[in-house]
Length: 395
Image (cartoon, rainbow, N blue to C red; front, top):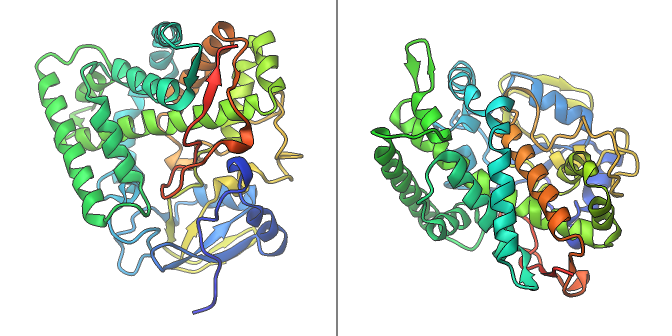
């Protein structure tokens, strides 16, 4: 076997994408990498190639195909059979159609007032100096997703523990990760069972009632997708919040600008989504036939990763990509993907980040780091890359 570079690449200072992406983009924009599983796959580093992969139905997310490469050996939640992210049409089309009405802008925007209220309440209870991740960035998204889903009694401590285990890439055994997934699944099945008689009016109720003619979600589909919402709804959002606040506070002029002009928040959120993804795309795809991409050919049966880190920092689309520009035209960023697997919860995630940052800069205009940015430690051993701790002061 050729000596391929190991993927994922370790991030650069303060979590920025590795210089390896730029080097490969210049020399070999579509080249093979060695995955943690020991398999190999092509990695895109240009925006054009990533969009082509994400949009082409000849690249399958069904990794149960004989001989299909895997990102990680053993269990991974992203590749678990029966989940929306691991399906191809027509199964994917059916399930997405059933769920799409749950996340329309009209439905999601109805939650804005409650989100502003929850954010303000949490800020009011914070000490003058607090740890941003533990005290704010993770408790708030958990509270929000529980509120939005209509299940306020969720055991957030256990949910965090299960999430950490399922997203681990090195610190836990496959048995421990699978056990966490099974326990989380059983817990969500209990929550859904409790809400069937009186589902209320949250997103879980909408999922229970979701129909397309005579078709509706079965029990397994309900549980798997509710679990996925909780996993993405707090872990990804909390990690983006932590990374984004560090970006805005180092140097602090980014945060000060938003505090002075809160109307810039929606555009700033898009730029922060472009820059501060907590991990590159883990959704490996396999070619069902030979596919010609702008930078080369992927043969039938070979795997390919459409790199979000490569695409979102491609200077041909985003000039001076490592500089934060709160007025940048960011419509082409791939933080939520593209094509048939475009993130179903994108409307919810955008709304949540817009409202949280809007309240944050208005209520805490003097927020500042409580230590040096270079002393911030970063997580390792997980799909998610974010600050491990982020002490801040209200100012």
